[in-house]
Image 1 (cartoon, rainbow, N blue to C red):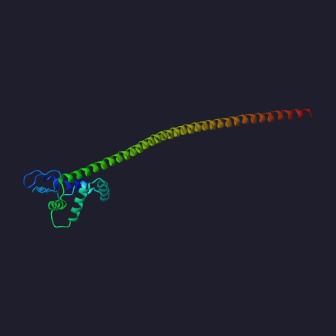
Image 2 (cartoon, rainbow, N blue to C red; image 1 turned 120 degrees about the horizontal axis):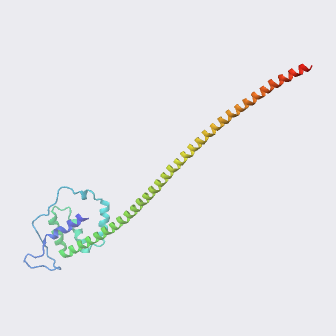
Image 3 (tube, rainbow, N blue to C red; image 1 turned 180 degrees about the horizontal axis):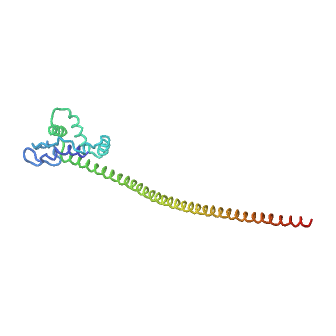
Length: 220
């Protein structure tokens, strides 16, 4: 859009506001303006901005700008468009269109100024939409950060729970080992006591039964 507006306005920036007789023309004069001989230089290298232009977006911007374009400028642009296939350079084409409409430079420049204002309004609206979208993005990033904090807290809780689990398992293993030792000691002790009782029983049986047998035989 900026390059188009520059192209539309640049030939008029090189016009003189004087007629051939040297008298100044008023804003309502219908004389054809003089064009300076110095050509407008154009770079042959495509700019980075031009390479990034989206044609559909450009047409939408132009449609928005055209809503405020004065009729005089619209008529001038229409004549320029109708002459685009003629064999003439831009300066000649602009001059011919201007002469055909008996236009006024100030009126046309006022029209381009309205286009620029409309363009700036569109740009401001777009920037507002960008800021709104950026706020939404920032909010999402903030929410993501909060989720990360929650995840970190949960991760720490998991670590703590696993540590508690390890301590409980260690305690259970120690208690199980202690219980096993106590069982082994008790079993061994029980077996020892049983062995002593068995020994006592054996001794009683051997000693008393033998003695009783001897006495019984003597009495008979």
